[in-house]
Amino acid sequence: MPILYFLTVALAVLLPCKAPAAGLDLFATHTVTVQFATQDGKPMADAEVKVYAPGDPTHVYKIGRTDKNGKFDFGTDRDGMWTAEARTGGEVARATLRVGGTGDDQSSGMSPYLLIGGLGVLLLMAVGYHVLRARSRTPRG
Image (cartoon, rainbow, N blue to C red; front, side, top):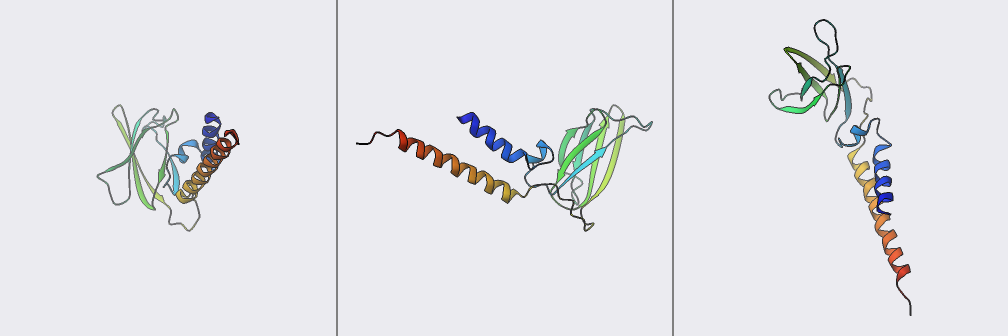
């Protein structure tokens, strides 16, 4: 039975998300995809990427690696000008991205309150199930 609980919680968390990784970033309000290429136009595959938040160019917000097509996805927690930098071999590519502020609702993240509330409901259901099951096994007499 514990595996059933785990699968139920995993599905409840991951189904509303566009990508499973988005389910891990509770406070992301936007998901951004950047594609990096070398000077000759080839994708920067498996390049190290560092992302810097708006107004904080000295502290790395997120570190990761590009996929085989040079793409890197990350979640942002606020609007503004974000900077992403990819390095592979001797090449460096930088991208500055405006996130939000266009008036369009591009939010792809899930509200952390909704997520935590849903997990709380699932926890209460599991505890209730165990209580009822324990009561049904108790000998009466």
